[in-house]
Image 1 (cartoon, helix red, strand yellow):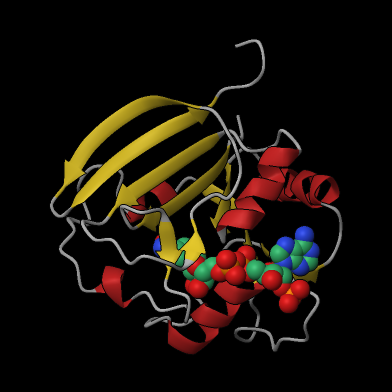
Image 2: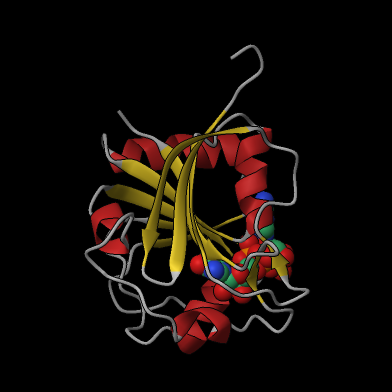
Length: 179
Ligand SMILES: NC(=O)c1ccc[n+]([C@@H]2O[C@H](COP(=O)([O-])OP(=O)(O)OC[C@H]3O[C@@H](n4cnc5c(N)ncnc54)[C@H](OP(=O)(O)O)[C@@H]3O)[C@@H](O)[C@H]2O)c1
């Protein structure tokens, strides 16, 4: 059964990047890649991904391994971007969230859908009742300002909590009205 999940790392004060889109506060930290809520286990269950323009731009400019997503990707943007690599399945879109989500679920074929970020895009999925889970790794740092984790009022239920070296990792399920 497909789940739509926002999986990300954040600062303690709720930012996923600095105002200049730096992730330096994150990338130097100690994490066990086989430990609780690790990325490799998560991505193995993902069949489609979505991200906003800033996140895509960051990956193009900075990602150490370049574009490393084998599954179809939707990039929400009004800008013109180059494709990430030959043969990569990337669809630039300004379509509405619901129709993109339906296409993602179909493409995922039973696997999960990953909202990579940013926070407002995850919020747009939540606005439509389409966000089901959030998995957050909290780095032990505050940065005072930046790109927000999830600039909305969304109610969650904590389902899982663990330490992975420097990170506090938590898995939350979105609580819908009446639950
Ligand atoms: N800590 C982590 O693990 C983590 C994870 C993911 C991302 N990040 C970082 O966090 C930052 C997020 O940046 P951000 O907050 O600016 O969010 P973003 O979602 O990456 O980019 C926002 C932009 O996406 C476009 N967009 C969003 N919704 C759209 C829609 N419905 N239709 C069409 N276009 C839409 C708009 O750009 P245009 O209209 O100009 O195209 C918008 O300004 C980035 O630096 C990223 O690298 C960190």
